[in-house]
Amino acid sequence: MKINHFIVFLAIIILSGCEQDTQKIFVVDLSKVIKTSYIQKQEDERNKQILDIIKTAKNEASSTYNEMKKEDIENARQADNMTLTQLWVKEKQSSRQKTIDAIHEKIDSMYKKDDELVILNAAGVVLSGRSTDITQKVIGMVADVTVDYGPLPVVNVSSAKKNKR
Image (tube, rainbow, N blue to C red; front, side):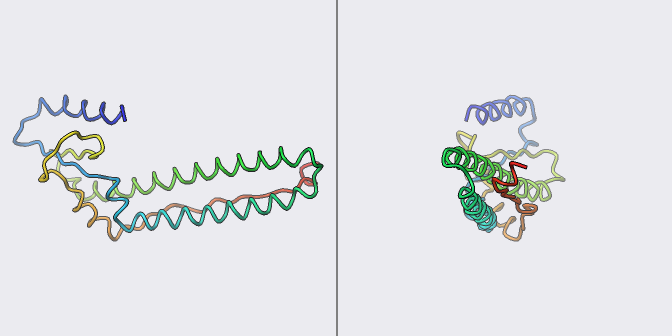
C-alpha cells in the first residue's frame, strides 16, 4: 500500500512541472477490469487446472506412504504439503502477473502513440473525476484478449523405494 502512495506521489511531483494543457492523466481500476472481464474466467480456469494437478500429486504422494516406516510418514507428508503449497502460491502469482501483463499490453497498444499520457492504477489514486476513469473502456478493450499462461506445471512423485537408491 505504501508503494502505491509513493508512486502516486512521485507521479504528481513529476507531472507538476508539465504543462497543464498537454498532460493527460487517466486512471484505471485494474482490480475491476480483472473481476468483470473474461480474463478473470481464464485465470480461474488456469488455477483450477493447477489445483487439479496438485490434488493428483498429493494423492499419488499419499499412496507412497504405505512403503514407509511409520515414523517417516508424517515428515514426508509435511514435506509434500509444503512443496505443493509453494508450487500453488508460485503458480497462482504467475497467473495473476500474466493476467496483469496482458491488460497492460492491450492498454499500451491502444495508447502507445500518445506521448503526453499517464495512466495510473486507481488503487493508488486518492481522488479523480469520472472523466479521467477509463476502466469501462479498458474492460471493453480486453474483452477479446486471450492470456497465454504457458505450460501447466508438471509434478513428479517418486516413491520411498526410488529415493533410497
